[in-house]
Image (cartoon, rainbow, N blue to C red; front, side):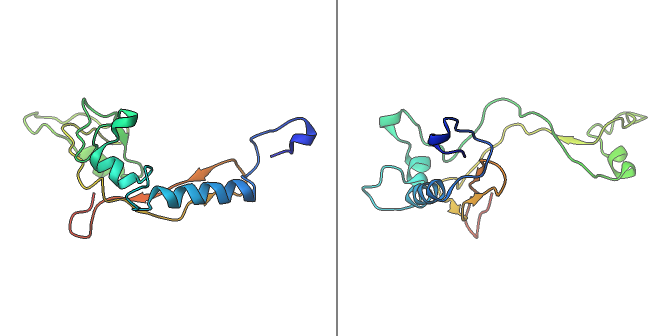
Length: 140
């Protein structure tokens, strides 16, 4: 980012060290289980946060049907044999990669996230936060 002295601040460069420290500190605070911490993400997911109008998100059942998610790099022979209707004499000819569309989805154990270290791009103003969800016995 350019300094304020330059008169122009752009968002085309990676975050500076101060931004990195602030973001990392907030990320750690998000997973601090102290009962007085209003930003504790697992508690917000599990119990909701009435002050912000947030309901509980564990378990979560998104409504409707998800958008199709393409499954790349499936060999043509395998992709052409994938079909859901076996009552047809001749299956449809494959003209595009297979896709998966989810319906009636139930997500559980969302209130047990495990944070990974935040990542910062070396070239762009991008912060990546990765969270693992679930437990050893029941992963999502």
